[in-house]
Length: 447
Image (spheres, rainbow, N blue to C red):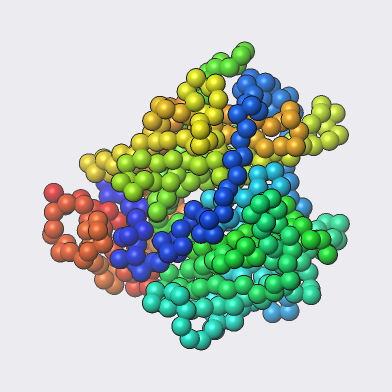
């Protein structure tokens, strides 16, 4: 059976002209910001005690920690395109500076010489001006945009009519704190061929935030920097089905429990996977696997924010506690965390079965750490031994295009992105340009 291929960035660039900005400005700290080691080995708590607290107060408890916002509509209503951010920084009081893999709260539109960007869900957009002349990505076909972030009108209100304003903040690299600054604009680059908007962090003052009224500290969780946006619809074409298995080890009175199920994956410079986290609050959060240069190993860093949730802290449900979840590597005997707090995996590509397998090396296991101001809720929440993820390269249903559209042209490429004859032997990429201008790419094996 033919299966859709999640194209590597190299192939995407060669075939589709998609320019991945994290090739030019690496996602790993373009400003050489030192991400703090956020996990304290001495804070390790037994899974049994953590899950006991979780079980006692979880039912019906989970809710968003963010205020419920409503955008303040502008006179000229513009329909923006929902996007994913393949690279970004975010900030919370509990975790400090992290990334948020596949952040989906932003939307944008560049059309008819105008640019619009809404970095946060349910908050209003701000506008940009397309600049003329050269820029650092001009050779890649990019237009330079200057966005005016700060406005005297609110970007959002909440249910209590509190007003929130867009602004920019400066990161203190010594303390990790963010403070509102007087900067009003931020630069960006738009790649029309890929419909991609890149908003780089060129200085420590380029963090886009929401603020309440005249507060100097940004609204917790509403911070974004160095984000590379592409439309959700276009990226869904490269998302694939898969499965996972893993075992939660026995702890105290809690028996071992096997987990399995379906996942969704996106393969680019990194591999992004969602659907295998065993905690309900973050089950659908994306996890980023950083792939080695050789392509046969991957690591999951602790510097990823998987999500935040509130839980009732007492049986009477009179108070709540906020928990922020991040991955963490845990030693196989569960005695402590790994030295760098990451977990490690083998990657195996099977061209015969047309699958990619990501499997624990056995040197550590995948864990989930909860950050909280409450000591009772901070610590290891969950862990999976022998985690195994199999990417099958079958299309996700809602990514399948209308098959009744006629094909206008078809080209074939090898795995290095070079155009080849359709009869060439081996694993090829078949790129079909449809009559409506859409593009479909599938992997075919010629024997």
